[in-house]
Length: 459
Image 1 (spheres, rainbow, N blue to C red):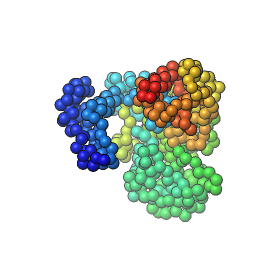
Image 2 (cartoon, rainbow, N blue to C red):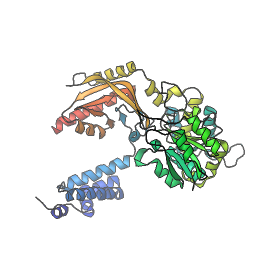
Image 3 (cartoon, rainbow, N blue to C red):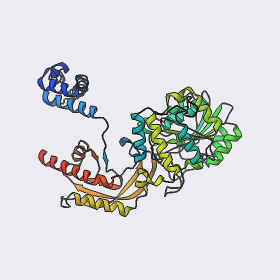
Image 4 (cartoon, helix red, strand yellow):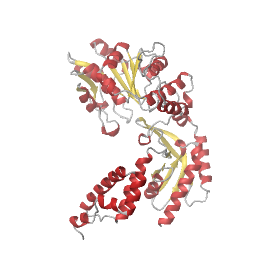
């Protein structure tokens, strides 16, 4: 067996690969700086594998790996067919935008806009004023503020209102959000001091009352939108927490997270709605790209005096949204204002009758010729995803396919054109079509057939 040093000596240098004829051709096509950086990354990975005893591939394969990485990087973001059944798939960008919002973002990106211009006076305006007017009209909040994402909204609120002060939070609400970020970390970054209240599964109003002191700056309630604690549990009513904060003379902040704007639409009763929360809490925060169905954004609603403090804080500029986010959010909120929220892709998927989903699964099976060994139309369960409504399964349907190596088949689908994602379950691949549009069905069928053909070639 070759030693680690021997394996590492067989790995070529970046310059040696760039000097080869294939390397020169790839550099001319992709750009030498990008190809060089891709080679550095590929070679670093190969050296790490050599340390574990893995033999490196030949030079042509190494160059092909780097060229592939460079080509994917230069191509930028790619549209993906989502056949996972997860509606708000964080890795796929969460909520797909309606056409109106996508066009608005494209227009804003392609031209100068009146982003911070008051056209009436000719003076500087506020970039999110239109979105904030729509938000206050839709929810009844005194004022609103739009920033880059919900974590930024929470960070800003804590820094502006509770820096060097204590913030009371139930132990059962010290959640971890996407990317490994945790509520205690956000609190620490804001300069506030966390005071844990109650226990993981049971927290009472008396626990908050006992933790209050002259050092308390804010009471924070975090909606656990990405998990559920069931069984022997207890939590005080939101109105009781708000009343306690009012008596103590400190703000009450309710972080909703998933961003349901209005009650109803078949949403479980334990999912709080923004228009209800603003009637109770002093400040409410939530995401724009989850149940709202818009672009990434962090939305703050609440008392005008408190929102004004947030708007004046230096962090507000650091977490502001750009013009394309603003344009897309305005378009989405305008659909709500016009009563056309059901046209948002997220809500179409959430509300589509299972019979219609089942019919789309049948069309996919027909497009696959209906004679693939082991292919079946099956009942499935879709999910909301994106840290929203955990445990709330949606009756759905899809196509199940038996393949020799499901994981390898799914990898070929992800690498295809267009890329497609599926589920791997019990030795099968499953295409849940609640998250597939009618227009995508033939494209998904082609992607599946290409992956099957590639499997035959490799076999």
